[in-house]
Image (cartoon, rainbow, N blue to C red; front, side, top):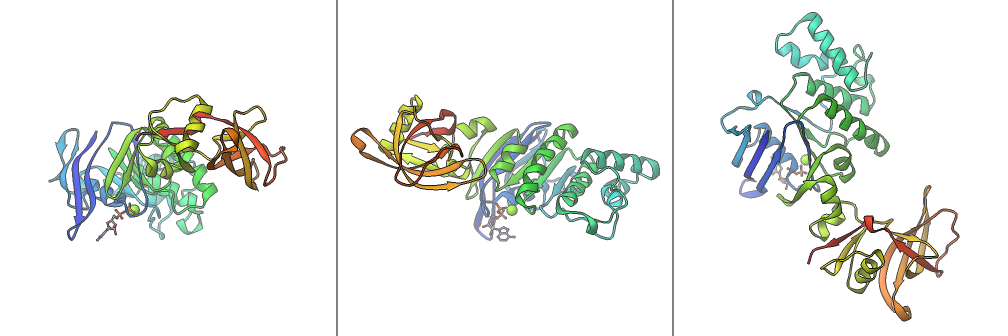
Length: 334
Ligand code: ADP
Ligand code: MG
């Protein structure tokens, strides 16, 4: 397995990665999630041996400091798969095998197997220029897997694709990695991609890992407001609004802050919370509301998001009742 211990990396005295500890167990997919510029690519490059680092990067307990990139047995794939445009798909995928002096039938068979794995059976004779963005990334993935790397390093592998395709390919990527059983370290700025693809997640901010754990745990218990918002929570409520929501959801919390997903509050005539609608926006699946929460005696508690079924007629100024989905709240510490 991969272990990263106390790793720091600076560019001309400016820290890019600060004292990072991470492990990736055999067969596991770990996603490092963080905004642009937080040091993800730098960390990945250090693991690949392309960037000198302080601290220790080890495989199965053996320090890799003296192992050059090409001896690590790792494969690195970027957001723009970097295919050889003059070579066919099959020759791209078989590249690492030919470098290893495999020839003829064995290369052809393995290439076919890999194309099958990534859902591109029959694409072998195509040129990269004739493929869609998603197909190109699948070819790049097959090429990275060809040499059976002991660790696959993925740098924003889906970020260059448009939203719908990215979502679909994220699911495929998860299935492909599971089937291949490849130990993977993925970095991305996209929380949905991290959630779809990974087993475990580390959140990175300004060079540091601020939280790591199983997906569900990080999802349900973000360590602070910044992390919650980065994970896709819509708002962090404080004070009386937070208390009212937690009480309505029957959640006991020590702190006075709660991170709330957009769909945590649902218009429901039997709901315990009262609110006045401020604005309304229809989406294909539901109506999104911004509301002013109201306490006893109509005391204003602050603004919040809510959703309503498309069938419900609701407009600005209306009184609504809301129920709370406790699975879409995260009480924050402190
Ligand atoms: P991410 O991949 O999370 O977007 P990077 O690892 O690319 O972030 O960059 C982290 C920080 O290091 C940024 O502030 C970036 O400007 C800086 N940086 C990255 N590469 C270099 C480099 N080769 N020389 C100097 N600074 C760099
Ligand atoms: Mg990057």
